[in-house]
Image 1: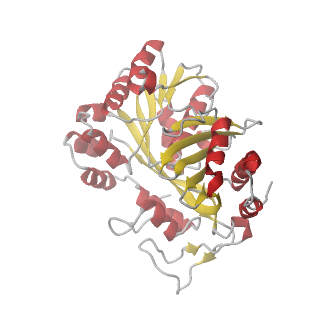
Image 2: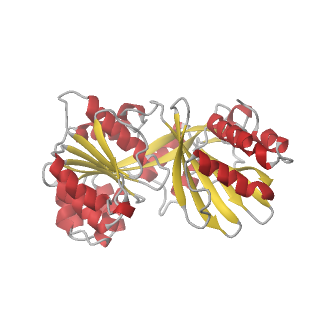
Length: 406
């Protein structure tokens, strides 16, 4: 179905409550066709506002009558097997598509004018099933493959929400489950399980029952694992447990919210993790971001194009056409940095408890290619714009690097 969402909404402005299931089906299908990652239903004083996130950017798409807000949320709750009569507490559930190509996660949250609902659309296709499919820079992809052959250490994948961290972890698990020299004892602890990986014993935490990451990890250590995937480090106890596991002959893969490899080390140190644990337990830190790719309608920048701190002499600009829905972008690509804590200069900085900026500078001094350099390389390669790098990375803290990493 390719009906524009504006047409769908206009057709239902006089909608009665009994027609809500139909519009929900059409909206979910339209979001799927558009490639949206999230669909937002936000109640206001006068309407139910709808937006969706495409390629990391939230777009307003229209509204429904305010009177239908409760019916819409109730229908989504029914599909996700949630409690329709509880409107005073947050709830989470799942809607699974009939063809198993899309898994939808529903989250409700009480607000002033009713329940805000967000549907996350999790695609189960094999487009990014393996490490080689992720589009990582060649040097980072090579180092990631090498790290998966290690039999000890913590591989930390960092970045903000929506930067593809979990996708990277799942690709690593699939490579480990199907590579040579197998089978391996592969286990995971997740919240929630977003994709089923054959060959991995996957478990989902349940904090309400006392089954959190730290508790689950301690029990998993008695399950004779060789590789452990932990969905996320959220607290000091989990951080200490995964580092201890990494020091006892286990390869541990996990994610952590941090803006760079150096910032990840700084945040872990701020949690109270001892420098010797970081120095000995960390195998590597992969920090990544997703940038929107230019559509085929892009044009070379002219001398009149507004300049940004990221602008170069040969960058392109987004224009817009029907193929990209007038956004100028189509799809996303990844930029990434790889921080190796075993390098003497970086290891010494960790043990001296240097702050994140000093640690970053120490890493760059011995050849570390950071995200700023990767972003500039993406601009010079012509697949994204200075404006997109500014949106994702912000303004450069210093002058952009003069050279570009690959």
